[in-house]
Image: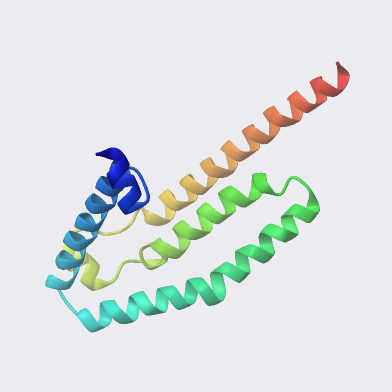
Amino acid sequence: MTALVRRAYGASPWHLLLMVGVLALVAYAGTRLLHGGDPWGIAVWFVGAALLHDLVLVPAYTLVGRALRLVGRGHLVLVPAVASGLLLLVYLPLILGPSHTYVAKTGLTGEPFAARWLLVSAALFAASAAVGAVRHRRARRDRAA
């Protein structure tokens, strides 16, 4: 049976099961999203996000990654910088201050978003610095041996 599924589908049955589950989750989320509001606004947001990602963000972080590779151990800075930047991009409206619609629909003030983003960013960079320190210490110890 597994060989038949693998031959027909091209991957294991577990992969097929996972893909069906993911598609079911996406379909559920899509119906919940479209049920509550403005389908044209959502479509414009998705197209805009895809264009922003493909035309602005991919070239930007590709250039930053290449520049950091030229410097040396830039990958230790790249991971927390990209993660922090993506969090900023996603939560920027709430970091700057939530809209009246957000407050009305959720009942939340949105106050802690800026502080939490800063704390998460600081933790990401601190973890990166710790990894860099451990790698530096190991490299020094290996050179001495």
